[in-house]
Length: 232
Image 1 (tube, helix red, strand yellow):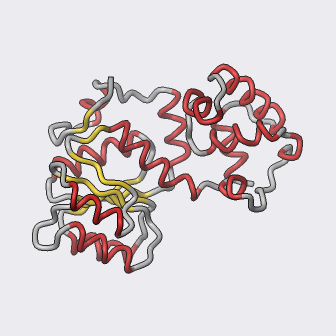
Image 2: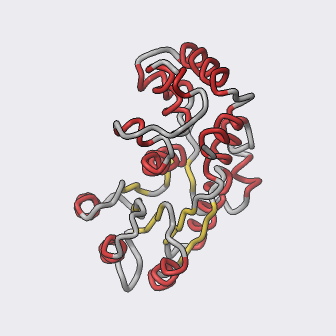
């Protein structure tokens, strides 16, 4: 069952009660996301608070703005890794704000939110460079998946997938092509099931490859594997 984020979810305990406990999977993403900032721009305080809790449980740093002016001022202090912006921003609509963000060439992926389905606005947003457009009530699993995909290109091992020069990790040369693919997907934050689906193999086979990767790179656990990769 998917969890839907609504403005009524105001506290971490409320979200945790709906399936957001700090399990191993969540801890892994928290390790991966610890230095990443998500900036939420929405005129509804409840939505901002609920999404802030959601992203913090995934390890992200968060900041939110109720007005476009506050968001644009904050951009000068720190560029977010992802911006989540409501299409409806009062005096300055979300599309206008999206144009201004893209004009600043910050490089941050922008995910647009819609209070209700708006096909024409969604198409325009995508043409302007939005990563995706999601309608409320927000499907939390879908939102997190979109964010992970948007951040995937920033992962250190992105060069492997793009055919560029791989990072220098001790033991990396010992990995088979399949093990390198699995390492790429693990580093991108995909679960065994997601990685297996992408590679066309079973989650159990992914587990076997993961174990071999960890052995060859000298990692004791997944968090240790991430430390080895991200500090190399």
